[in-house]
Image 1 (spheres, each protein chain N blue to C red):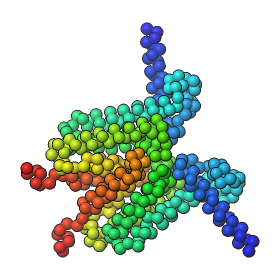
Image 2 (cartoon, each protein chain N blue to C red):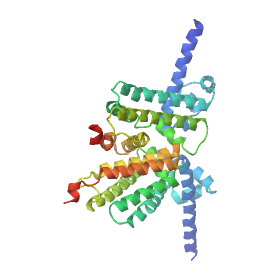
Image 3 (cartoon, rainbow over the protein chains, first blue to last red):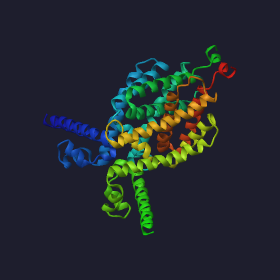
Image 4 (tube, rainbow over the protein chains, first blue to last red):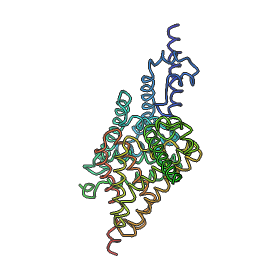
Length: 208
Length: 208
């Protein structure tokens, strides 16, 4: 029983540390994190933070995983409740736009992609790469289902369309930070619908 | 004469400081700059750097202007030598892609847009905003000329298309850092041509 309650406390402390690290990383990126700054923010000793994460890198990796899981929960889970094809793809983009609204003052996932681009090697870059490639795969999968359902043209290049959608979401994030979210959201939605229209099945395909 | 040579030396020193600041900012962004780190990198005293720029903010603003001017020189100047319309717009995007290739390990202008988004106020944010809005205007102008020349559909929303092109360039920068430049460049070029095709004049417009 005592062991059980210690474990519960341990989980709560771990969550608290992660929450504090998350706030710091939203401001300054994962590279701004140190065991020391996180300890101060969580009102703990450095050795207390070490006891939970072992190293700065382990803390960064765990945080990246936690945010990635939160993103999928927020964006992908609601989309999976929509019918396959365009309804699901549209919901995915709609939820992604909402994620962008909620994180317009700093998204750890996006800044990680900048922090760990070609300049750096190591476990974090590998992790970011895997995470980004995984999300691109999810997008491709949703696009593939829309092709299967006959909502998008046969032979649509799923990698190409996934790149085009991803680019628009970068445009949303960028413009929202500079010129305001609502205007950027409107531009993004118009662009997304134009994009879908450009991949619509031809008349010949529809009449087959 | 002595005055002249002091001025020349002053200009050279100023350029040296800016060059060192630029290298530092490419790595860590404008916010990573301090008079102290720049002084160390330029092998000068802090008071020497102060004598040229007066404050950290003035150094950051001057650097931002210098990089912005270099960008326009690299991207816009060659485009202006092309005929108005699609040739000029295509050259603009081609040169922008080349800028992105040269700065794929860190572009001060792009990171400034992230550093001074909605989170911060002040002279630097104002400056970044003006710079970004100015570039968007340039894009709109090039698009407008392509409409005038009959290369793009009448009533093309120039702000919308400028956003769509800008988004693609963000996609290029993002994917180049993660998955490699050449693949990202190919995706960007395909997307740009698809985009232009979607704004092509209708048959009715062409036959008027």
